Length: 116
Length: 111
Image (cartoon, rainbow over all chains, first blue to last red; front, side, top):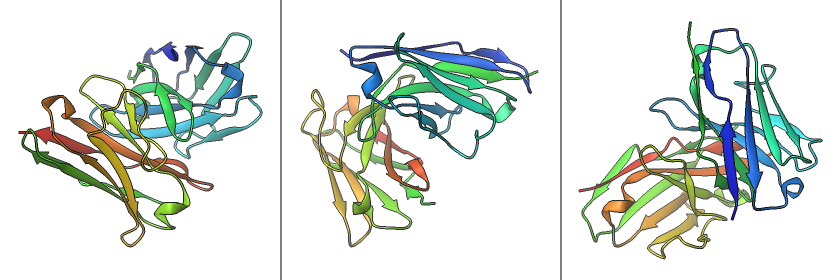
């Protein structure tokens, strides 16, 4: 059974940083691209980043490019998202998702709140 | 870049059928697969349709997907509506410049 478990969310100040983690199990981790998708309170889903199975290729939405960095540790089946220079509009639940044709499996999400 | 447009909300009675549209703003709807996700309140999204019209295991056959090139849109149809189908539904597709794109979501209310 595919399982994705996010952690690392919490309260951060504007301009601050956080690192989110997503622990995966139930599939061959290095064979799949993984993504982060976020959802601001009361809003829709927004794709923000994807990393290839090897980690060599990364993709970002314009809204986070230059501020967020996606990475993975295939030896530990863990996905990361480094959030830097945070803004109030980054407040959201952040989901990790396994990429199949779309986003086949989702974690339960971790809440990031950016506020002073 | 392209946009996927969905109606804000739809409502119907239990046992009836509801169809949600998802219109692609540019390029053919058939150029990349469309997925549909269901998100119940306070829950993570889950896939109900992938690759335009495929159902993951565990998704009831009351859920079906299609694409229509004449209107450049995809549709999610839920037949035999149940109260448990009350949720937000999002379409999603892809292209090489916009990458992964979601529609704005449609709230389905079962009256």
